[in-house]
Length: 261
Image (cartoon, rainbow, N blue to C red):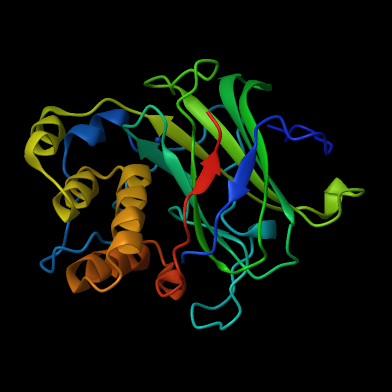
């Protein structure tokens, strides 16, 4: 599926980055807890990833599809997601996390999401532009609960693009990461656990079910709000290590992107 061509335009949705505070796995697998080892760590490949539909490309979590050594001191733009660049969610409006390196202040970033219809056809369902302050760290983009933006539908595939616009006059120079997300229904076990769980228990319930998008978003919120909590830090580190993103574990987690509803 070819990426849609886009040009810079007036920002349709006010979005400010606040940085100062510093399947084929089958869908039936969602009903089974993800396999774990004896240390209660999700092992590599245990997330419920899925194959992109039709002729869809697999996506990339770093620009150009390249990846440097895990001990590299230089960390570039990176989407926090499994290696196959696909993930599941049980949320109507999931969050997406990205590590953004240091860049020129007020650099424009674009996020676009398409609903997959069939081979060669998709439909844009959401687009937003926002400015950064240029500071490095992990940002969280929350899809807005808006009257004109329907929740993600269960069983449908969605493709997203996150682009750092390096040169507004030459969009071919964009730094781009992209991936797929699919919403699935909560199984009975997860439903029951979420009724009484709170804090870290919520993140662990998502993790045991294998839904990456909700696991990482919940952990990021907990880590941001409780930076000194060692149990949260341990879980955060383990989850990132499970997808070979441990080099990002110590990066600061910034305030969420504020999007007007």
